[in-house]
Image (cartoon, rainbow, N blue to C red; front, side, top):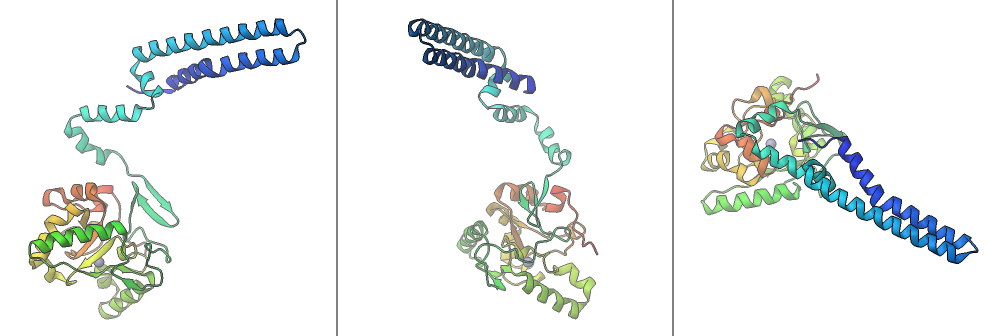
Length: 297
Ligand SMILES: [Zn+2]
C-alpha cells in the first residue's frame, strides 16, 4: 500500500475544515460585531457564526474518524506513521528478498566539505580522499597521536582490549591518528625505499589514509607476523563484535587497493561490522557499497 499525494490532499482539506474555516467564520463575526453600531444584531450574527463553525468542526471530525477506519493509508498519513508501516511490510517479505536488497539499491554518495560519505559512512580509499586539514576532534597540533582517534573508536578499542586481556591476549594501538603532513612524509619515504608502485600497495598517499580520519588504527606489530599470533587470530574473528572491521582482508587487494593487513582495523559500528564479517568471510566496504578504490593517476 502506498500513501500517494491524494492522501495528503485529503489531509489538508480536513485540516482546513477542522481549524481554518471555522476560525475565519468566527473572526468575520467578531469583526462584524466590532464595526457595527447595532451590537445586538451583530452579536446574534456572531453566535450564528460560532454555531456554524462548531457544526463544521464536528462534521469534519466525524468524517475523519470514518475515513481513518476505512483507509489504513489515510490513517498512517494522519498519524505520520507511514515509515513504521513500511518497515512492518518489509519484515513480512521473505529473508531472501531482504538479502537481495543491498545489490538492488544504490548507496547514497555525498561529499560534505570535501569528505565523502556513503549512506552516511565516511569513506576513504584510493578513489575518495580527505582534505588536507581534515582531522578528528582533539588532534589539532599533532602529527601522529594514538589517543586522538574518535570517541566511538576509542570505546570500541577499549572494550575489545579488555575482553582480549581477560583471555590472556595483549592488544595495543601502535598507530592511530596520522596527519596529512605526517602521511605525506611516510609515503614519500616508502617510495624512496621501494618505488612508487610497491609503496602504493601498502601505504596510502597523503589525504588517502584512513589514519587521518581517527576511525582507524594499527595493532601491535605492524607486519604480516601479526596474523600468526594468538592476538591476530582472535582479532580476525572477533573485532566485528565491537563495531570494528578488518579493512583490508586477505584476497581482496583488487577491491581495496591494498594488500592484506591483519593489523589495520576501522570503526564502522556493530551493525555494519557484523554484515562485513559475513560469518568469517570478510567482505570489503568497496564490495558492500559497490565502490572503486583507484588513484586517478
Ligand atoms: Zn593502518
